[in-house]
Length: 382
Image 1 (cartoon, helix red, strand yellow):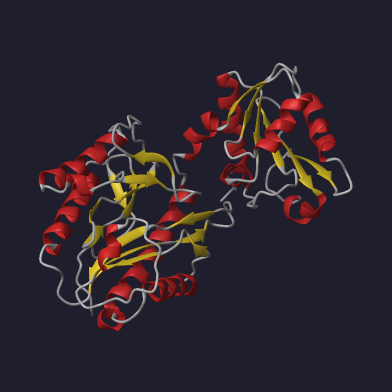
Image 2: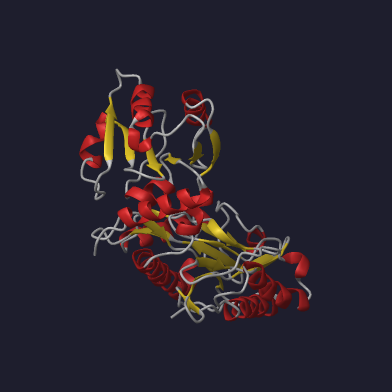
């Protein structure tokens, strides 16, 4: 399969032209990875991708990256190297002055939303009369709808989370006496052993009353019989390297109990499970993100727990664990095929326990595809 980067850059150029913008500049971020396949953490060194509305793209990069960047599968990509003994702004200026990237100083330049202020200021000084905006206006509509390479990676990430979730659930009584931190470390170990590149986020293990804190950091509390335990985890997996690089995350939550649960627990768990089912059943092209949140929230409110559901119903996933679309009240964004997001309603009873159930869902042409398949009940053991 042909790498998708030239197609993605061409789509960006079409959108730049349609928006009346002249140039887009990307910084080391998921946007740079999306357009080139190259992933790098931001640093003080100038590593910038320039995409003009017309003409060839250019990459300003430290010469130390020559081995990694020289073979990027993008025809006509201009590479402008600089060394640590050079002034990197001279390399930037060379690119800006090139005819194919040029245009007047009064051009409209869209910069990566994640770009550090120091780099944006450099561009403002080099183009003092330019109008500046954010690249998300061009990139977000492209990134929000996943192609087949991305969907395949997200499915594999979901399958990985499923396998680890089932392994933990089947251990049953073996979980008793483990601390939250120990169980989180074991989940991370299992994810890595089964092909995960790295945890997609800090694994959440929240037992007993700690489960009432949606983003609890696992600590020294030991899991006791009857404790509801919220498990929220996932790992990045690599996209098909022949078709493109990039890491895509899994993100799954289950709430389990070893032993007999508290008196109110089963009612709460059933309510959350029904809220998630209602939300996923409502997913189809043309509905709004806010309507999915409403479907889940209505079930929880009708059961009398509306005040205990204090967060949105979901978030998009892709190269980032949290990205649009956000499944939140009032969000009028229309869902379209290729969008992928979590559906994760929860009920949190302070001082007692919490319940959250989460799966990733892809919008299809005629409905939705759930990317996680492990049981959603609370029971443990083989």
